[in-house]
Amino acid sequence: MKILELCHFSVGICGVWQRVKQESELLSKLGHEVVVFSSNITKGTNEIASSEDKIGKVKIKRFPAKKLGGESFMKWNFEEEALRFKPDVIIAHSYRHPHTTKALRVAEEINCKVFLVTHAPFIEGNTTRSFLSKISVKFYDFFIASRTLNKFTKIIAITKWEINFLENLGVKREKIGYIPNGIPEKFFKRKKAREVNKILFLGRISPIKNLETLILAMSLIKENIFLEIVGPAEKDYLSNLKKLIEKKELKKRIKFYKPIYNLNEKINKIDSCKIFVLPSIREAMPQSLIEAMSREKIVISSDNIGARDIIKENENGFLFKRENPLDLAEKINFILKMDKSSTEKIKKEARKTVKKYKWSVLIKKLNNLLSDQ
Image 1: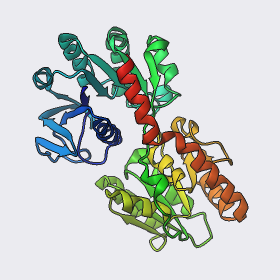
Image 2: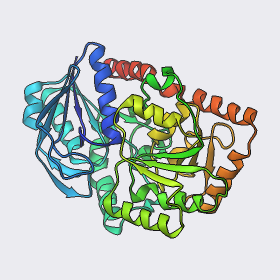
Image 3: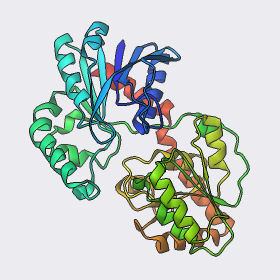
């Protein structure tokens, strides 16, 4: 089967790209011919990536793009190349983006199956969007979604919580499937590295991650535990965080590190922490959280819709009130005082919870879905 994957980015730190990369490689290993089309922009920068690339047997072709608003809303023309490739299946990633409606037009012309993977762009009450963004979202949902969503062969939700949002947009329930983002097998097989007395955040260093709450919580923790913040940083935001750390006299207890791209190094970094914290204002499906849980880490997340889909309080992890440093500090202090048997029980339950996210399990479901429709 010839499969075309469409996504915004195929270079840089991008959750959507990590999903596309993993499933493309695994679909290729199942014998399919897989090609990825994306923009030529490197996520998180203004750098232009090479026009062609290859990962294993998966070919990647990148197209010149023009940003239309925000970081990922852009225009890039791939239709002619797609028509030449003549895929049997198109998998278009990210609802509310121009390339997904273009995918429908290509699929109609060559009479192939076309799937939409949503990537959970729904926000409760649109609370974190600007006024202009709210207007754009309402316009798209009312005028475009109503005409296009049910034309897809299937809509693939990556979280269970977004299914209600899709049904409210008029998507027929039988059109909706559920296949979450996955975890590579190494997260379950690799031998554990040594744990030290520290807290870890691993992810993008950007305002949506709300790292000031974590830093302020550190100022309320008396025990001599350290914090490592690891990931690609937005320059102005990083500068503000460093000023806050200096103001709170935490320079000796908080360190920043560059992003980790090597999978083994990433696993070792997760293994090295005692507590993993994700303080985000919003998460759709928090990949770093399920990765930490697969390594039997005690995890604490802000009480957001994505984390609530995964964490059961005091069973497989902990939730704290969003943007509330005191509540986060109290959770950290509580964990530090827990006895070993209690922490081990939570760690084991965390790992058990996320076994369903193994890519070895999910790729079979995806392959069956692509073949059966």
